[in-house]
Amino acid sequence: MYVFMEDSNLLIELGAKIRMIRLTKNLTQNQLAINCNFEKSSMSKIESGQVNMSYLTLHRISKGLAIHIRELLPD
Image (cartoon, rainbow, N blue to C red):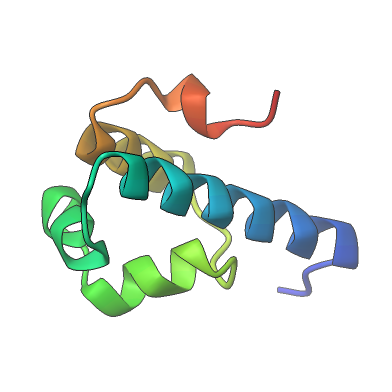
């Protein structure tokens, strides 16, 4: 699937937001990956904006971070 430039920027912003929240909770990528039942490499790709996530993936990440899924979405 082709990702448009604007879409790519959205994914990068979302990944950066996930990383920022993870760091404020003093979690490593590996710890969050374990919380979400992901591989660490998958979490790395998500945080760098390389993955177009499904709703279920966002849900698992929000649960892994102990936040509401709305906190991951743009303002």
